[in-house]
Amino acid sequence: MQLHLIGNVPDGLTLRARSFVSAHGVKVDVRPVEGHRRWWLDRDVPASVIDRMAAYQERWGGLLLPPGPKYDGGPKYLDPDAPEADSAGWWFEAGMQRTAVPYSFMIGPSGEFGIHAGKWAPLHATVEGWVESLALAHHASKWARQVTKLVGDDAGGIDLTGYAPVREVRGLTDTWWRGPDSLIALYDGEATALDFPRGRTAMIYSGLDEWGLRGGVDDDG
Image (tube, rainbow, N blue to C red; front, side, top):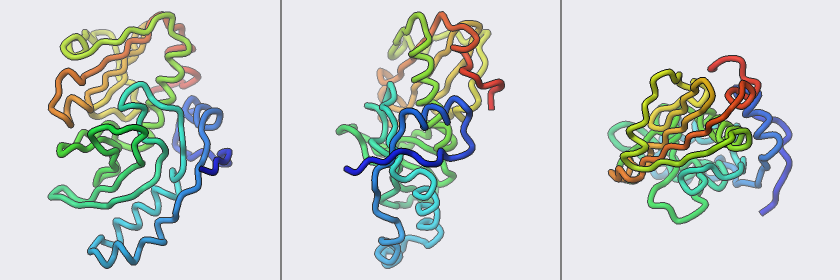
């Protein structure tokens, strides 16, 4: 696998996420989507879907980031493949898994980033949201005085009174919450996609100062 430094970090990210991608991300070589266009067209994949895949590859293709704290780290690297359709529209693979997890990482019909295992769990409204969540997890784990992991019913019973959503992660099934001195990440994707309540996970990063809470991000996106 040929690795390259990242020349241009995609726009639309917070300063925290841009710094994370620049410092910790690399690019790997990928096969251009256009090389498969005729093959997909011959199998009734609409040209507009292939255009979406090409645009995704142009922006994110080959981006390899450090593993996240959930979903066995997330995709190994971002790159589109395997378009498929159902009653909701067309989907395509967001990137190959790092390990043998029982679901695929997918981009939904409206651009959501999520996991699919027969049932769809849109984790974030955009790919940018997924990248922001990785950056925030990396940042919070570095600056927190204590990190607590809860699973199942314990994770679902957290009182979020006094917390506000962290909007830059564009959370759907997965969300982040900011309190006076802590950040909470709620991961419900596996519980939803696999109908497995024990898969619900919460990560609580406590003992954070203002820098730890925001990492230079002045607002919630």
